[in-house]
Length: 468
Ligand SMILES: Cc1cc2nc3c(=O)[nH]c(=O)nc-3n(C[C@H](O)[C@H](O)[C@H](O)COP(=O)(O)OP(=O)(O)OC[C@H]3O[C@@H](n4cnc5c(N)ncnc54)[C@H](O)[C@@H]3O)c2cc1C
Figure 1 (tube, helix red, strand yellow):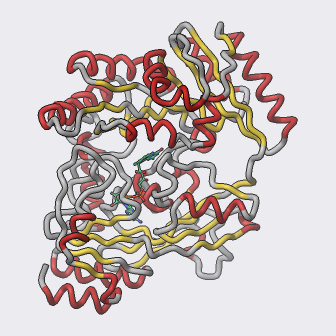
Figure 2: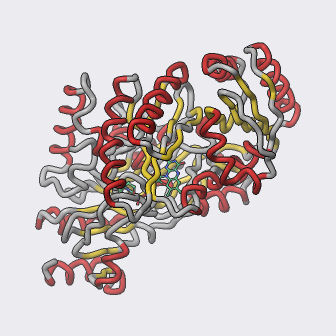
Figure 3: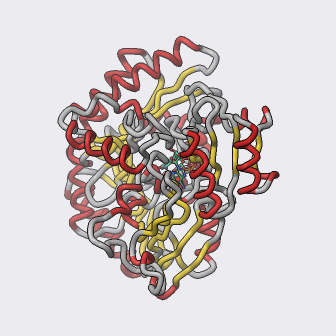
């Protein structure tokens, strides 16, 4: 990168926060995403506030330098891979947390991780009821940029549903604030839909391709202290689906309700069963592993009783193994994700959302691809919000086997196409969905025009958002 530009960046962020060192660039050339070729940027800059971000974008825009916004670097689909000789803007120094206790909202800088926020909120008897499995390293703003979902989402939905407002630096270096905080006289974030159409939403899930989210205001809730963990077995998929629908209808407060097919659970239990203290067993055709949570103990007990009754009414049986949901919830799923790392495998995931009544179609399509290519993999998913299942099928390969890697990457695209035909929608509009989403042409065209309007010089993460 041009040395004059580097000097300008050093003037803005401070010399120690701009690097062109080979080893640093190497560290930023890849992320937690596996099977994606690393790309070396030209420089990395680490600003500490929105004004510095704005000044950096002004330079990048003037010179047409491609910009990749990076937070925790934990994304799994290559969204944070830089462009060759481009600029990485890393946001971890924006680490301020401001609580608005009476409004039950909190405003966090773009570098605040879920782990840091949870530690802070626990001191105030509050929590943010969505946390991804990567909670210790992933930032709240980074999760908003992908509209993430995770443990807690069975109750609260994707993270976007908790957002009250954003501060955003646009590629032309203008700073906008959305939600009630746009009024400088407002006492804090108290309403998202404050000034007509929802501009906040345009940036949720935008994968760093429209602007830089420098702070996020989110809803927080009284911390739950009472939990019920249980497993429920079903002989047919329909029974399991109906069970989940009835639970919602009866306002049973599931925080994490995972739906597994038998072979998927056997696959996971091979890896963590002993550690969880779960005896080897033949898992039923479908298992729902569920954590219910409530602030009040008596309400929790009533929910737990109701869940058991509904299970039996649907023709299922209460398995009674509590270690599985407890392990999922207490470990915030990290335990299962760790399965993917303890073995020397590489893997990729085709995140998608599916209607709860249609999950069997996703399972069919995933299984077909696993059988066709003889891949090792699984079909797991969890309830995510009002009416969706968040599916995260993974395929594994031996990291030294380049042919197998290519096969998996090709198969992901094939699977995404088949899933779309089976009624699924993208969870994170990663570029492999590009060209597969028949019927969305006018929607995607509008998105393309929005991108051109907001980022006319195309500097922000080009090609990442569904190929835009
Ligand atoms: C072990 C593991 C478990 C995971 N579990 C989950 C899970 O349960 N749920 C889930 O949703 N995801 C999960 N993920 C994926 C990943 O953690 C999420 O995608 C996460 O939201 C990324 O956040 P980050 O801070 O690491 O952002 P990065 O990976 O640095 O960036 C992600 C994307 O957002 C953009 N971006 C980041 N910050 C900003 C910002 N402030 N403004 C504008 N754009 C920005 C980047 O350009 C990039 O496109 C998991 C990943 C791992 C490794």
